[in-house]
Length: 110
Image (cartoon, rainbow, N blue to C red; front, side):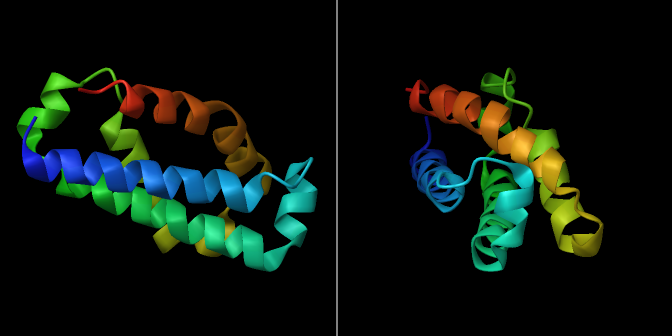
């Protein structure tokens, strides 16, 4: 793995930990969305997560093509360009289902 890609993966894991931390105290999407600071902080970290994907080398993304890099970046675009159209239950589902899986996949890259 290239050093730059390795550093980016480390950064992605830090961002994922923030997403988990900012959302972990809530029991539902409605509860999460009602806490504006936590919700906004989480959304900003999703934007940052998508940005990091754009910094990975194409060779790296091809090697680990089981991760849907494009989907991660596309979600960043949705948040950045349609913030007021974000559907909290969908974000909650991503946090509950996809973020733990992505974290595990990134931790297993060597």
